[in-house]
Length: 259
Image 1 (spheres, helix red, strand yellow):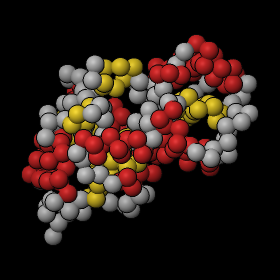
Image 2 (spheres, rainbow, N blue to C red):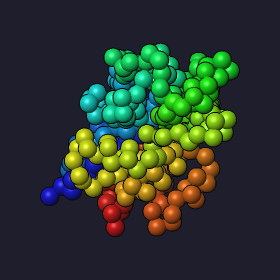
Image 3 (cartoon, one colour):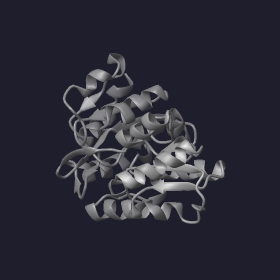
């Protein structure tokens, strides 16, 4: 009988970088969906905050990936849930492409600051506006605190350094809703029920160590934001590192991950 597990797969840096797939990723995903060994449930979990699910899904399908929109769980969705549950009126430091995921949210007279990856927002006047709101008592929410991410032209600053700047200036800690928070991984599992889970990603801290801390197995891929010796940050007993997503699928199919 096929082993039933949930595979949580990161997107940017793992399946693709910008508009290009990582080596063999499209075919590897097809192979995974047809797996007789696991018959896996697949959930794509991402900290991507520059664009909405619609924009992200369109990019993925244009690359050639067979992915359904309802298979994608983002830190933006986790942030929206928090905003709604706590009746927040946020100042949204997000790119325009991400705003449709917050349609209908009241942003008048803000009582919260929500920070995602938003290069167009990370300038003095906008940061200063956020700084003043936080000093006045606004709640502080970070969609995630990624240090950097991979673009076609190389590694680039993530939202983490800008969140840290506001924390430093205000002596106020942000509430983080995305990876590597344990609550994010458990919230993602609510989509598919309680099952055995494996995370595949390029970020040793947010993807791999975050998943291990949540009680899952994880595979680190040497694409995207991977840096030499990142795998040494993983506890040796839980260390599984391969060159790319296609090799991660081969590792799963081999059954060695569960030995």
